[in-house]
Image (cartoon, rainbow, N blue to C red; front, side, top):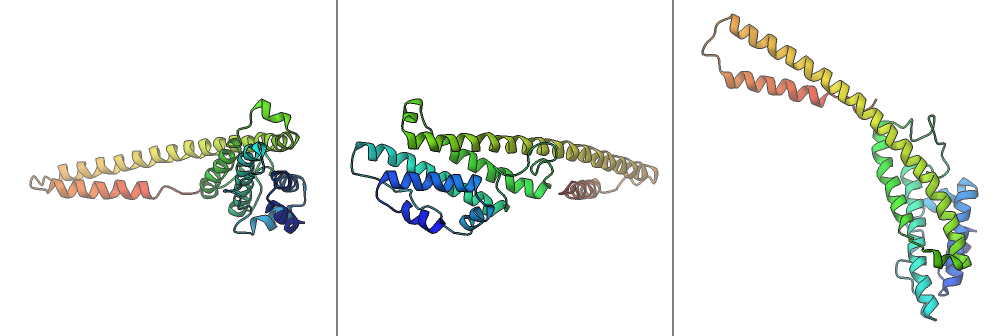
Length: 221
């Protein structure tokens, strides 16, 4: 089925291509996940960045939407290839995938999710355009995707803020520990009465201690 859709997407008529894209999108959302896996395994999904139907004025107008729509579907497949799951399908909420994701994977997932949302918003349809049945069908699929993508993005931001708070607490704790060590060191130097002590050496040692402390902040929480 996927090969048939790809073949139809290579047609010169905007009607055939647009319907092929909408059918592909519908299967990515409601079909078996193996269909999405197959699409994600391809290096290039839809190569329609230069598509242009010159058969009439409507063809020129619709070609713009086809280029935007194909870009979103390419980005959707790319996101699955990067993350090994579909942002639209995953569980949301307190126990959702984005809310419980590790720091490293979250740092990779948020830009990927942002890219998919950006590609979706570039479709940029206006109310008069929705009178066209094909555009209207695509718009409904995109709108439903956007709601779920936004929920994922919200979960990711909450997760990031939680991790940032913990990191800040650890940072403050480490800095406080370093300050305590430096105070002890300076007190020791004062007590042993070495007036010719190289101050630069002391500052260099303290800088190394401080740098080491910051580097040791955990990357995963």
